[in-house]
Amino acid sequence: MHCGIISIFPEMFGALTDFGVTGRAIQQEKLRLSFFNPRDFSENTHRTVDDRPYGGGPGMVMMAEPLKQAVMAAKSALLNTNPRQKTRVIAMSPQGRQIDQAKVCNLVNANVLPIFVAGRYEGIDQRFIDAVVDEEWSLGDYVISGGELAIMVVLDALARWIPGVLGHPGSAVADSFADGLLDCPQYTRPAVWSGTPVPSVLTSGDHKAITLWRRSAQLARTKDRRPDLIEKLDQKENEVLINNQCN
Image (cartoon, rainbow, N blue to C red; front, side):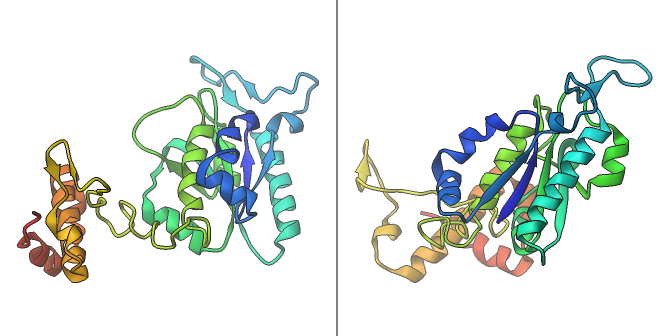
């Protein structure tokens, strides 16, 4: 998967490219990132990419033209190596639609070349959003200093769904939210820790019983912590699972 990143701080992404699952995905060339700095497309010698907001107010606003030129360069570079694919420009913004696991999976399965735009300061000139951006995504109802961290979170989530990235192909499928529920509790050795044993069903060897226990544990945890997700479950499955006790 080849992604374009529009950011005035591309060096921040070292935390993503050098470590963990995403670092391994990049080393294996399953995930490729190309960076485009709007300052390189600024129209003045000071490489300015922001200016005061019309109408007054605090802070600065990112200018449309440097961002547009950076996106155009990203599209050209990505399509040069993937001419049969399409691009999708995604700006990370508190005003965007809150993403979930389904949105992440859909982006991977859409077989498109995503170009992520990292906003800064008080935001981005709306004319750029209207003319160039296909979607605005948000991590949640809070504000952080810039879009770089948000993009890194999204890229990490994306990388887990790229075939061959995770050591075990079932790991992503078993994650929280992969099927609309939180993940079930996980246990490892020793069998008894600090006087508390692992649930006996997990050491029984009965795979059918383990599968049912895990699904029921997912339901119980989700009902307790995220009841809003329970409402989206198939009603029949909900009734079956809720009657099963999680021991």
